[in-house]
Length: 555
Length: 78
Image (cartoon, rainbow over all chains, first blue to last red; front, side, top):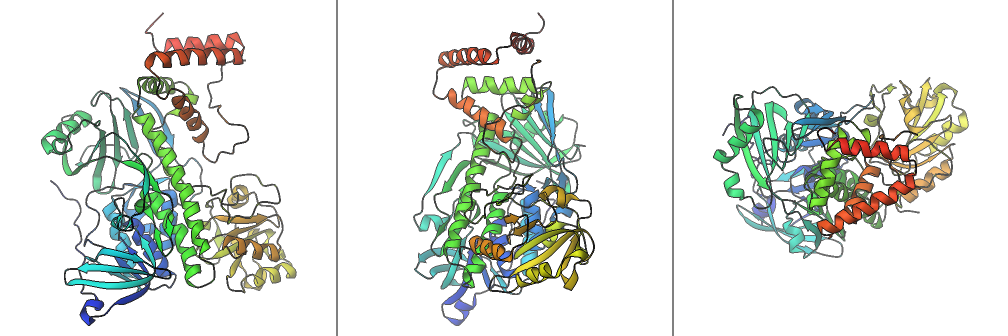
């Protein structure tokens, strides 16, 4: 098989604990250097924590695996300092086409709204994502990565967890104040701790093939229901980097995975799909089944589960790695505050609550997609085909066609960290909302709002002309920067520059005003993970402090 | 009134942040209505459902339009 990518081999280094014959202690240990473990480690390290990341392997993901990275994930990666290389290498796309038998029944655009920095989705082989994350991690001196370090035992304690780690040079013992478990769907640590994960297995099998093609396919997602080249099943085509195409064939439960994986069986399927005369080469083939399930709790004292170890979904909708990276986004600022003694450990319960809510939403949406794509009864299939038959001419039916509801962030509207509105606002930027991007102009030169937001609590205060900001407001805004949990004040304005060196963002195209329903005086409190914590029609520092206390479980 | 074939589903009191959510809520409920039924039972449920909805809509001109579109999609030519 052809190879467009050289898999790196990460060096194993003899751990100091073995060299010096002692136990080790670290404030935080993360197990699993997949996308979610790496993002968690990078985020904690860039916020100044000493981080140890352990992985039992010494390379990146084999095969393309996770392919689609959503807008929200790219925004998180931007905050971590490595979004740009992903977008440069990846294939950006917004258009998806859906076919039923011979005909295209409709198409959709993921990002119909202008003036957002990142596209709706990029396609990028998971090995590139991990490779770039490892490169990013290597630039952080307080992040230590140990490859071929396999955790073989975990003993949770009241104020720390103890680990036994096996290496090519033998085993050693570590203790850690906090253990973040990112060891994947089969999570050995979850099993070692005897923790349950509940849900259901879907009785279906899918063949996935990475194919290097010279064929001229556009940069779009194509989904076929019951195509002539693969009757009664579904097929999905995605373009990735390096002219590698990813094809998923639904096979049914009866298929024999070992037989189906053989090139002599795979190649005719692809030939039937693209036509015999186009040249292609197979790069990687796998057969997978999937489950939709989640742990009842994601946090267990000093042990915190993130990504696939905590929850799994069907692949329809690209909600696996995307939701795991959002777990890291949600967890890290909370863990950092708890580690600093600035918030009680109950703040970590809200990690479980908020991401559990997101996991339920992801499981619901991906289960609905699965039920539409692979109907479980004759009646269900009849309805599905009726929807597809009506979709070409009738818009209502297009809205019902479900070939995967592609990953979008959850609105955490029921979170106990939110402060409820006391005024009327239009639009979607409610407390708990993931914040919308918008173009800006600023002294710092950042062209996008989300490049300014994140990593700390921030207060966005809107006035028409920043230069007109009165002395009392300036003093009120400046006072918020004091205290154990500082809030960075930011003036958003149509024009002008705020007095006293206050950071000013110019709402260059009026999109912030439009998307956040701003009026002069409107004030938003943003969480460190770019979610709305609270908003008001006027600036009142006492209310801001109360909302910060609420958002950190200090109320 | 003409037959409305634009997306029109919603649940009173429920706020949607994603355009696909109301349609998916409905579709899930529809398929759930048929859970564990035999094909004959499902046909009967569908017939009863159509009768209930037709009476709710009331306007026979609208119903004729819907019936015509529904039939036209499954027979080559009448």
